[in-house]
Image (cartoon, rainbow, N blue to C red):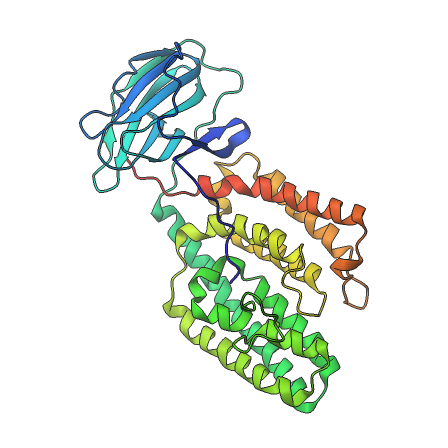
Length: 396
């Protein structure tokens, strides 16, 4: 498995649901509220008092200085008192810290909900906001997603993965047979086919455990796929095939790959795809592709990074499929996201030759690289809110 891009967060994390349904994660320094802001409501978030300090409001921009008065971390929502839609979600608000947050809301009834880590949710008093029933640039409320919403999606995705295992097993068996017979030209073709099947299973990597490293691991630091003595799987075989190694040297690794894929296929039904992973992975698949495939870091000699990127895009589509019902009513930019993925695939596949081979990443012009990077960046940006939308929220 590729390591997911790590984002360091120093202080409280704020998920603000802003225009167009886009969920943006912001960070605010602990104690970072501007005490001199005359228009800000100072709101407490504690076990003994949640939402104290906000008693009324007028439709439009609401500015809150939310202070955690407890001795532990706290998550805090601003939600509609009737529909339960969430307008602000402050995650990991540290003990004693204050975070400034804003939401643009219309007339209605709202409340803060405080969620201590080891306590039941605490609902604050209902506050009536008066004024216009429609306001410009209003923060859209997002209906909370529950664990029960995501479990069927996780199950459906797991079933799709299991349905791909026979194809993967057949591909690695063909590769092993090619090497055993000494047909290394055909082995290269079958290696790519099997590898692309595996690369399309992106959202399930967390459930593959150690099998992922055995099947698709990368060489250790300061080594290459060819020189790393402990590396097995697709990238070791790739390095050997494209370096001109003899079949006898490659055969032990293709035989091992057949065994490892078989073990994965046998053990996967006992594993569990975390329901939270699907929304997160839908974004991370392309983040990782941008970091590893579009930089050529994973190229062990085959120069097929663009083919892998295409498989990753296909995997993104499959990761979104089981949560599409959840997103249709919560993410207004879903159609735009689907269109961006399709446009990305069209662009990537324009670099595939009619004989099935691919243009090497290294052969792209600067203009082509910039166009490809920009298209993938745009797609990643549209995918980013999905993880926040699919974040499980506790009911008050």
